[in-house]
Length: 368
Image (tube, rainbow, N blue to C red; front, side):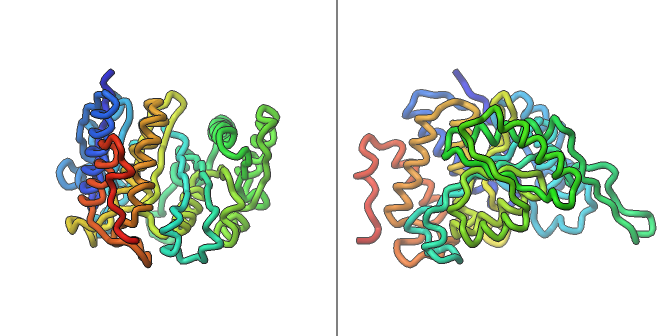
């Protein structure tokens, strides 16, 4: 059965890493006898320049008709002075809202031979393996009223949540914990915010349905400190929109590079949008320096969560791990050993692994 995938390369290095993901998916399709059809659409700054909006109606329509969506990156300095409704990021927020994607899943797991690229000591990060489950459709980013007064002297942003919005993200987090290590940390600011107090109530109510999962509540400031001092403590973290945005970006330093971190934004029926955590990196766009692995791993998450192709997803993840363990890395990773290669070369290594009948022996180790 053909799977329809909308591609939203976006801006900067998004164009380059998307090519890598498509090459990997084509290799998966050939090896496992699948059929993927790709439909490229515009979003972000590219769409602003050509269509006058960060999220064209044609893009929205295509995404509604797709089985899944892959997104590269949006943004760049040339749009920084645009009015709020013409910022590239509005395209990303808008498509998440249009598709009803309420849960953002960000796994953070280090590769052993890349740990010296992390600013933290190796012994601190070596056992890091966590999943951040972030609510996507509520909170400060979507609260009304929001805006600035006519004289520019007063601003207001509103943090709003309904019980149903909290319930569905909490349930997703419990389900995720059940298939991992069965530990859930709910992060909030219940000592100050009414929304966080409701959040805690919902978590307490829901935990009775998941007796095999241990649950704790943690204030966001304490969680931020513990992520840096003891990241191996966490299994699954669930939190609201803004807290999740900040904590997941903080957690990204554990691996040494944003270029290694995938993410998924999903809804209950399996439809999802998959994107690397990194930004558009305009300073290296077009120079064959971008790390394609986060985009490739995001495609693996798509295979798993939207298409139930678990074996295929595992094959992609294994290919990435084998290539990295063979000593290859892109220039964003400041590691002691191995050889730095470009975007296209890294993609080729992963594709060769997937396409090979005996992949492990076909990757020449680049250091002794």
